[in-house]
Structure formats: C-alpha cells, structure tokens
Image (cartoon, rainbow, N blue to C red; front, side, top):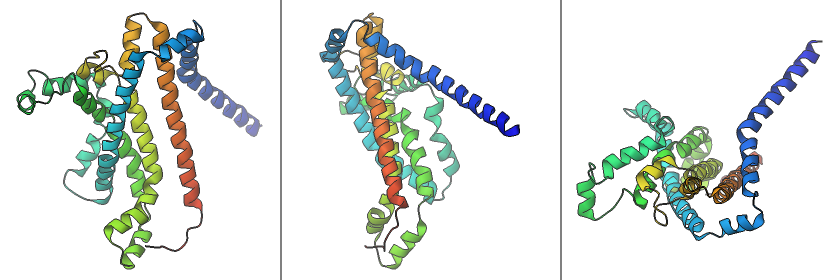
Length: 280
C-alpha cells in the first residue's frame, strides 16, 4: 500500500514538473512558431533574408565571439586563482563574481554611460585617445562582458577543484615542466568544463538585451544586435520579422547548447576509459 502511494506521488511530482516546464518553455516556443508561420513560408523567407537581420546577427556574433575569447582566458585564470591560491580578499572576490547575477543589465548599461558617456568619468581620457565607447561597439562589448562574467568562472571552479593532483605530482617527479604539465595533464581534464562554459557564455552573450540597448542605443546598421532588431520590429508592429528573428536566434542558441552537451558526454566517456601510463 505504501509503495502504491509512493508511486502515485512520484507520478504526480513528474507531471507537476512537466507542466511547469511546459508552461515556461514549451508554450512560448509554440506561440513563437505559430506567429512566425502565420503569413506563410514566403513571409518567413523574406524576413530571414532581410539585410537588417543579417547585419544585426553579424554584430551579435562579433560581440559574442569576442566575449567568449576573453572570458575563456580570464575566466579560467580567475577560477584557477580562486581554487589554487590563498590571498587576502579571496572570499570578497569570490562573492563579487556573482554580482552580475544580481544587477539588472539595464543598470549595467547606465553605469557604463556614467563612465564613458559624453560627461562620463573617463570621457576626457577617451577623447584624448580618440576612442568612442558609448554608443559604439566597445561599450556593447564591455556591457556583454560584464553580464557574462560568472558563467565561465562558476563552470570552471568545480572542475579545477576536482583535478587529479596525483597525475601532476607524478609528472613533476618525471621532470615535466609547468607548460608540459598544463598541456599534457591539466588541460585534458579541463576540456569538458571549458566546452560547457564557452557554450553558456556564448548563448548568454547572444541573448543580451538591456545592457546593450542602453550603452549602444540600438542604432540600425551600427549598434543594433539581433535582440535589439527584434525589439525594434515589435515596436514598429512588424511581428512576422520579430517572430522569425526570435525563432532563428533561439534555435541557434538551443543548437549550441545541445552540441556542447553532446561534446561533454563524449569527454566524460573518455575520462571513464582506462588510462595508460603517463607520457611526457
């Protein structure tokens, strides 16, 4: 009797989870697909081949790739320092990493305006150097870099914490240098974490809206990312273009996440295979 009650309870819990996920994720996707196909394939094709959409997508990809490159290097370094080193202020630094989760992206864009706008704190320096940050690509890059900061670090910290020290000690005993130890021993163990961290950072960078809207201004053909293109299309009541761009961007992000998950499973299977002797 108890087993039967537990079985019904488990099924109710599963149904509750499915309903919750369906309401938050599946239902909006269905509505987006329905809206995109409302006027037929011809309207979708016209929206996809729009020059404005391609310009915005190219800008989004440029910013996302730059952010991924910087975060892969510095995010891994920050995670390594937090795990492997002891220093004054380490706990404070570990807490600051999560600040982008707590601050609204709109506030981030406004803070950058206060720093790099026409009357901003760093505006005299930027004018001297001839560099434009606000309402330009550098400002949008900085805004996206800020909101994406925690993803790589939080993904890499547990991976670095679980590194097998015995292999490093064995390699050091065999006379391996630091670079040899890193590329032959440490890096292969970091690969799965790097893949997932890069994926999350890339997907988040593609979807950023509030911060880049404030610091970039959303100027068509110059500072308009794909998310800003969708926003402008909705404002101008061009709903098919907005739905199509949303579906395209969302499908691309989901594909990247699933690809990363597949690569991570492959890496995990390789880790479970019996390893041979250490060769340096």
